Length: 188
Image 1: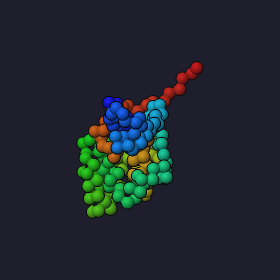
Image 2: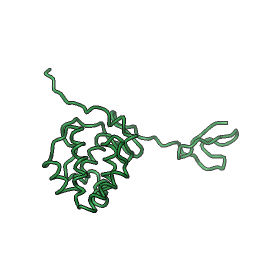
Image 3: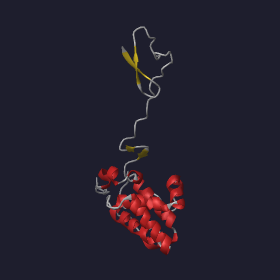
Image 4: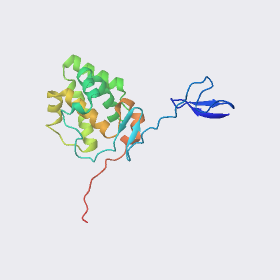
């Protein structure tokens, strides 16, 4: 008895007298597809492939860079509480659940119309963690005048630094707790 593989990569048994490359029912078996190897220095999580984290000090995307990650942009426009909840979970190091962060944003936005003040806290935490500048203006103005773009930018920043907020802090802990890389120049 030998093992062969189905197109989905599942092993099947092959008995004596059975033709090579066919199942016991006579169906042809294709060899398992070769999967592309990740580029050096990349991280592959469930359904996510991102490159190695960039150096600290600069935003990886602009405030209006929504075309670089359309799903998060649409989510920021249609249901920003989801992204804020995910960022709260990551930036509070798991102390705030995704649901709690999203609910607080919704309550503040619903009753006062100032959900931007809550999301501003997490933009400031993100900037502090990675040494990012206040661009294009200070955090409160960016959040109040362009809340959806600011939420989407902060979410993209986490993803571009190998942290997938959709998976939660427990999954991203090892990546998040690494100190930011410092770029230095040496004279040769």
